Image (cartoon, rainbow, N blue to C red):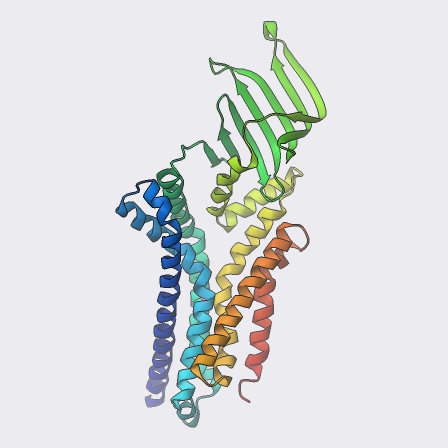
Length: 362
């Protein structure tokens, strides 16, 4: 009974150390980020005469997405420093002398990582899309003073122009290509005077070119004039930049919404690679903290000085973020399978951590 109590006390002590150090690291990271972000955007807030309450609200809604980005590095550094302090203060040696193996000592930290990752997945699916939406709405309408012109609704992109309405199935923002394009032209009585349907539209040389489409023009007596075309260069007042706000709307979608959207695009023969990468990224992000903890355990038990561990942790985090950016770019460019583009950093760092964890006894 007394041994069981000692085990519980040991687990609580180790977890309290890891949580406390990780919380400090998170606060430091957040403070640095918010200071830089605030001074970067202060001119925009000032010019738009945004009230201080709205500014605070914007950053509060923006915080969750920032935390998600820095959480892997936070867990990595928090675990590294905590285990390093245990070793530095000879507490690790005392625990081993009491019969605790390194695996048993660090087991609560791994369980904590699993809990964080599972909670993070559900947080990403439920709460994060709403906070992103609130922050983006404040920036778009309160700071940039833009009027609502459309968005992603009913699994389609809608955009209202002066005398036109766009209805689009999907868009590749990197290559400036629209798929499943429907353009409705209206007269002053809001009656359709022309309609264009095209499989895709590509932007180049300052104009849009429609491919594999139909032009419909209502004629006299209700007769509908229909013209088919293989390609058709047309002038549209909107450029790819006018559709960029839709990109933010996609960020609000959770994994299941994105999967449904990707399947719909692929079933209609449209290119969904970019969205597929984003979809798999939704599954990869939550598990990064756990994998970083697994990697930090053997490193924390081997590296001695605290400053060395902080430097090593920051270096690993930078390499992870750089690799993540590279593989995502390769995936969205069609040079890497969408699943691998999202998961390669996790897989590499996870395998590295598991291999090192096997030799932690040594």
